[in-house]
Figure 1 (cartoon, rainbow, N blue to C red):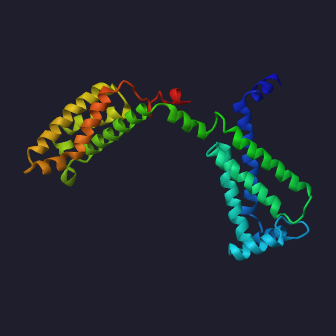
Figure 2 (cartoon, rainbow, N blue to C red; figure 1 turned 135 degrees about the vertical axis):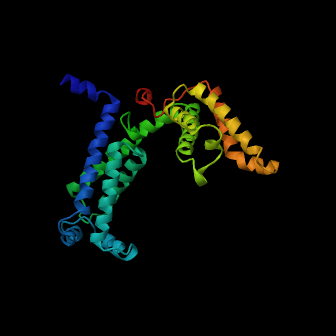
Figure 3 (cartoon, rainbow, N blue to C red; figure 1 turned 60 degrees about the vertical axis):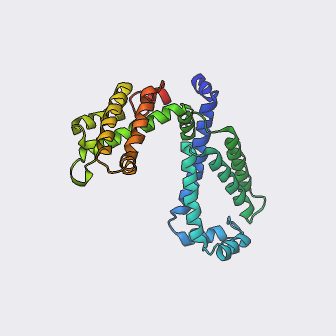
Length: 272
């Protein structure tokens, strides 16, 4: 019991439990109306003025303004509730999802033809809880938090990953597809095996500074060999513009003081 109390004293644990619970409630409610055993009977029960959930005013609005019959409307609403419940469970777009759920709970209350029923109070209570969660936040154990941690990891690290992985992938693909129309300066100036190895090492983030320097040398050779074959300076620049960008990227990568760990074995340790 003490362990349970200790866990509940942790705000991230409380947020997780609240998200899972409210998300589950919304998902189950949505599933019930998205996949009914008898859609017509379900629609009739929702329009029943004595026990239903939708007043005649809102029935007319759904039929005439939205152009939907109640069964179809309930199916769409069910899918929406399932989607929102799933998003809340995983903590994706938590604030927007929780606000949307709160507004729907308010709409359920307004649309109900039976004023004063206890089920109205239940929806109002759930509305208050999801609005509270929207302000409280998703907590550590959520997709939202993982994205924030990733974005806080440093812009230079993200740039490092974008350069090394993008250029490395291009090197590897150029080496694998090097004949016929696929032939270009990246796979025709030095042995394709070397180009392939450079690409793999860049993507794997192995000895990145040394590999970046070797890539600079390779690109200088590739750019130079292409330029001398062109008739004019413009054609030379046009024929090597992508490789020039790669060259600049590799120079930047070689001079960076920060090493990224994205998509490497260290990734989970750093960003968990």
